[in-house]
Amino acid sequence: MTEAAERSDVLLEVRDVTMKFTKYEVGVDSLKELVVRAFRGDLKREKFVCLEHIDFTVHRGEAVALIGRNGVGKSTLLKIVSGILKPTEGYAKAYGRISPLLQLGAGFDGNATGMENIYLNAAILGYTKKEIDEKLDNILEFAELGDFIYSPVKTYSSGMLARLGFSIAINMDSEIMLIDEILAVGDIAFQQKCYKKLEELRAKGLTFLIVSHSDVVESLCDRAIWIERGHMIADGDVKSIFERYKQSMMQPAQ
Amino acid sequence: MKKENAMTRRPTQQMYLLRLLVRRNIKNQYYRSFIGILWTVLNPLLNMAVMAFVFINLFGSEGIALDYPVYVLSGNIIFGIMRASTTGSLPCLVEQQDMLQKTNVSIGLFPTANAFSALVTFGFSFIALLIVMLFRWFAGAYVFTWQIILTVVLLPSIMLFSLGLSYFLSALYVFFRDLRHIYSVILTLWTYLTPLFYTIDALKNATLERFMNLNPMYHYVNYFRDLLIGTIPSAEAHIVCYGFGIAMFIIGYAFLSAVRNQIAARL
Image (cartoon, rainbow over all chains, first blue to last red; front, side, top):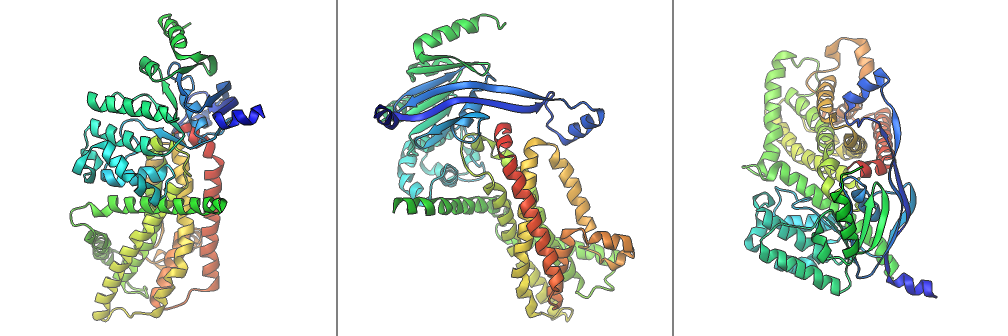
């Protein structure tokens, strides 16, 4: 019974996730290189453990920061959480819709107009035309792009791109929002509007999973998960973990 | 009730996304060029004019049952389905990587969209072909035949082939980024190894002729030209065309499915 009560509250379960890659010792990413190395017998494969025994649960309304140095597997973890990548062991299960907040302008087609990009982006995120039509007014209102919405996206300034991307992401009715690096673009007025909106959404019960290695997330999140070399080092209150994280950053890497 | 909804929702949604992607491809290809949609018809016409002009003098048109301009254009627009589909698909997953890194969308849709936009382009080119035929008909060099309608029997087979190859290449490109250069060389070679401007008899080489049977595009092009001449291709031609198509589709799809996780890791 307690488990059932817990279930309704759990939005994301990551259970004992281990991710191993088999890769060539020297990164081979061209056919030429592969052929040349194969002839020289210079192709050693190695197992590379990216994540090991990652285990956590996210409840409704939480804002969790994933912190850690570059290349410790945070992005891989996000891919596993969003169901794109299947882990070698363990599983990740989301009990709700996930939508990503993409980096500036990512995923937009420069030649298409803002309007076309709204439909294309939302369709890739898994929405039908009818559902997008319903959300359109809200998206347009929040983006404040005026008639620019009918201009090709390649003519947009970075602030306008950020507004459009953000506006699409927050208007998708998802339960979990994945944010890879918090946005630091757009004018201050719009940034404040974004933070206000994010807090508003949180109050409504939206859950955040934010990847970052900066402390901007400190104010937005209440929980942090620290990953180092594929292992979870700490999971808990954002303030204290960030304190420890910063201290370890100060020390030269062993 | 709700379950039923969920079951029809996904296919409808995917079809909608596919439509959007195809429309985007077509727009990026043509609509935004300065003479707009006219270019879609004009482009193959001009190409044909150049090729007819060059090759009619080079190879001569003796031994071709079909009027030479029609012969050249018909070969090229059929080959063009495969060419446009594969060259568009090759980088399509990598180009979408920002989106694919974070969204659980079926990646097969992107090469599929390229194959279908190639089919749409074929539709426009077909209009160009009809225009050329009309001109040649006035000149008394070409006679229309009803068998041209049977093109709809050919199209699924070449689409299967293009889809399969597009799946395969788009997946492979994720791992080998130099494939773009290699493939453009292969494609050029393939263009010349397919009798688009010349006839197979003009080669006067029995080994090459036998070798040609291994070239799927040869069979698709031949099938199409048979229709334009007014003959119905043999049962064997159907088996060969669909055999290549289905086999390639299965290979491509199986490959894309098999490396799906590695693609996700690589993007």
